[in-house]
Length: 109
Length: 115
Image 1 (cartoon, each protein chain N blue to C red):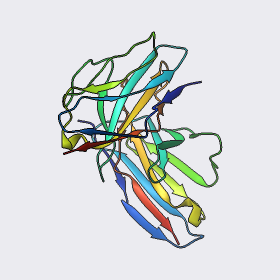
Image 2 (image 1 turned 180 degrees about the horizontal axis):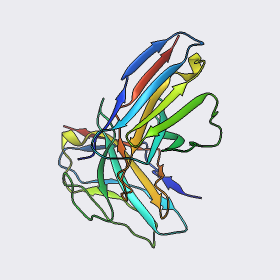
Image 3 (image 1 turned 180 degrees about the vertical axis):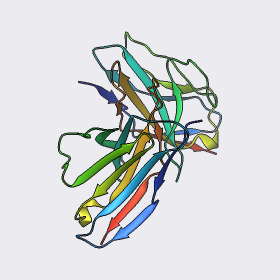
Image 4 (image 1 turned 90 degrees about the vertical axis):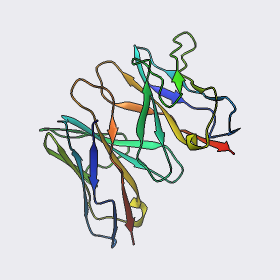
């Protein structure tokens, strides 16, 4: 069974501080991993996916198959980064995604 | 980019009535769409997978006779909440993915309030 764990419900950091949002997954096959972000009163939007290896809005995430993790990182948090962040897992042969419970990031000015 | 719309954005109805929510992929065709429910300050709960031209696949615990899904075209899926009750009040979100792309694009959601 697929499972995504985001251990922190809430993460507060000061502006300019580094940010790491944790995500661990459980999946027996080859995973496809995503980070989605939901700003206040907006729809969920894709932040990044591991296969593209892009850096979006300064965020990066590296898939670590050994630790089954896909942590989201940013070296210097900005106030506009305050939002809900969801880690999502997809599997081969299925377009369904399994979402974690989400982490609310609050950046303190 | 891929855009998904939902209509209506919010609806208030009386208990016992039925409510239809539309989900459209505006600039791509989607053979598969997904319907989620999101409770306040909680994550998304997948309700069902909507398949164009065939029956929807419901997640465990979701009543298929309660939540009717129709995916009649490659750009439109509808969710009908039948005989709505106050406990059906929630935020309903749909998503769709372009062909051969596992990325899901989300609609803005529909807030349903059943009185």
